[in-house]
Image (cartoon, rainbow, N blue to C red; front, side, top):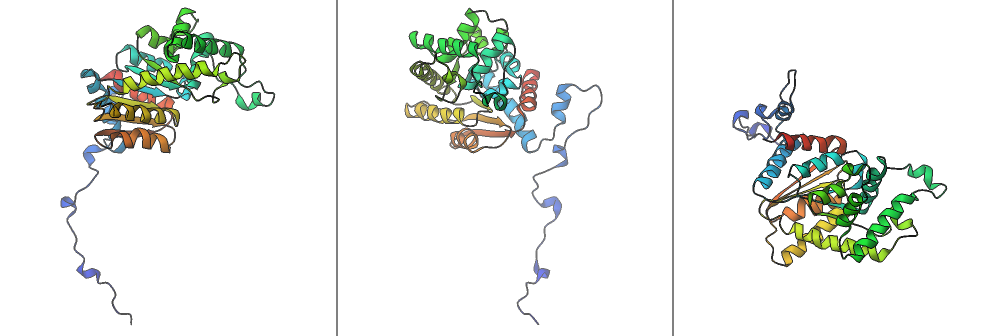
Length: 313
């Protein structure tokens, strides 16, 4: 017969009512009756995990604007391709978003939407004959804007937005760049040379792109310096460029003595990835503040946040 078998008769138990629990029925989702308002829907979501986090984020964004603290929205090009530009523009018009930052690819889709009302080509189909990315108007307009920015010692975001507005492109109301220009809000463009179709064109001047994008990096850093004590930084869909840019800008502000602590960050993307989780959600808020991470399709998650913010408290 085996010896030294553990004796479960000596195990101590605790009453369920006295055990700390992370989930309570008071946090559960609520059922709805027709007609359903957005307020009813939002309140009906479970006050658990991401449901609770989203409510908290909405409150923190509204509190930031009440205290006149910045809400910076960074986004990747896929957000524009999902048709979400009008919502971001409207949040800026309402004074909720105070600054934008994006990557080079967004300038392509922003211009094409303003110029023609459509964008996004079939890469696989057009790669075969080398015609991918060779759209004439896109290359000519954006490369010209980059040269204009360098000549005027200005940034890309301001210059492209002003050129879209100046040339009265027929669908310029869809342009976040032009809208930011009209609203006099900062919008910065952070490029990686060689990653976008504009560098394939004969008009391209790499020095112009580099100069103008660096001016935007300096402006972006100035915007980040104001986040401390209640500001909010949102990132939609930029998995590499904006997380890296944000971290470098943040360290400059702290190096220069700005109190860029105790702010809120939130990352929204379709999948969880290293850089946004580390460089936006975790590291920047380690010494004060709160970081949130939400996973889901942009065309669902951004409208949800938009509606919550427009609805208010």
